[in-house]
Image (cartoon, rainbow, N blue to C red):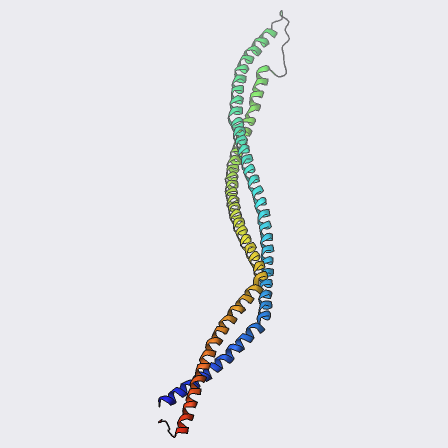
Length: 283
C-alpha cells in the first residue's frame, strides 16, 4: 500500500512539475516576446500624457495672461474710482463753500447793504427836503428839481436787491440738494471701490493658484520626459527580474521532477527485482 502511494505521489510530482515547467517556459517566452510592444505602448501613453500636460500648461498660460490683464484693468479702475471719490469730495467741499457763500455771506452782505441804503435814503430824504426848500427861495438862485430824487433812487436800489436774496436762497437750497446727492454719489463710489478691491484680492489669489498649478504641470512634464527616456531600462530590468524568478522556479521544478523520476525509477527497479525473485509486493 505504501509503495502504491509512493508511486502515485511520484507520478503526481512528475505531472505537476512538467506542467509547471511548460508554463514557466511559456511565460518566459511571452515576457521577452511582449517586452518591446509593452515598451512601445507605455511610451505612447507617456507621449499622449505629455501632450495633454503641454496643452494644459498652454491653457494655464492663457488663463494667467487673462487674469493679469483683468487685474491690471481692475487695478486701474480702482485707482480711477478712488481719484473720482477724491474729486467728488473736493467738489462737495466746493459746493458746501459755495452754498455758505451764497446762502449766508452774500445774503448777509446784501442785508447790510440794504440797511445802509435805508439809512442813506433817510439822509437823502432830508437833503432832498432841504434842497427843495432852498430852491424855493428866490434870492439864493438854486434850481433843484431832479426827475428822480436821491432818496427814491436809493430806495429803488434797495428794493432791487430783494429778488437777489430770493435767488440766493434758491441757489443755496439747490446747492444743498446737490451736496446731499454728491455725498450719496461719493458713498456709492467708495462702495464700488471696495468691491473692486475685493475683486483684485480674489484675482491675486487666483493668480497664486494658477502659478501653483503651472509648477505642478511643469514638474509632471519633467517627470514624464524622464519616464519616457528611462522606460526601456525599467522594462528590461523588470523582464530580467521576472526571468530570474522563472529560472529559479524552473530549477526548483526541475529538482522536483528529477526527484519524482528517481522515485519512479526506484519503484520500477524494485518491482523488477521482486519479479525476478518471485516475490510480489502486497498492495
